[in-house]
Length: 275
Image (cartoon, rainbow, N blue to C red; front, side, top):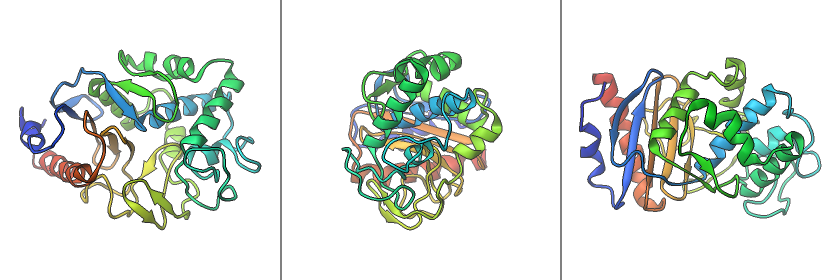
């Protein structure tokens, strides 16, 4: 257990007016700081939640990883792994499927439409019924685009973190495939952190691998996975350390976060090992 108030000392230097951060292992919350029950924008952390709904859909055989979806030749797997070739924010095809890692909001719009057609439910309903309600996430909701329009609390993101450390909604084999690199040799840009070769992604989650610079810390294992968002949101899960850390705030991602987030990650992991 991390000492009470320990996180507060690390967040005082952050320039955000409102910031909430929490750390958890699979058994329960270890430390929190700030208004962890305040609903704030998730931005692209929304993609992680929609991806989890897709994992359930795969187990229910509502979706199949290698069925056609999106641009010609692309599949559900391509869309989840940002390997469909779609442009970041529109329907232009910039590359053949499986040849470049192009981070694509448009790809998640296409993926959500595909899930809706297959299930007969809106993506928001499917997400709520398949993931959020079963986990007891009271305040996490999708209120628009499946790429960036989620809202919620750090309290509920820590619940998501525990699920991603010890999955109950999907079989361990599904979790293992979803959090392992797909098309592992693809190069591409990690938004905010530049070009990486390779730039590994799982099925909707970014995989740290050996990327430098990165928004997690140097102490994080290469197996660390998660997502961050432009609103100043993040959730990472380190299965080697058995730890997940989530944060939300009211200051958009920028150079401050590229420094503060890795420092926090390293500090949490170091403190956990000491305790």
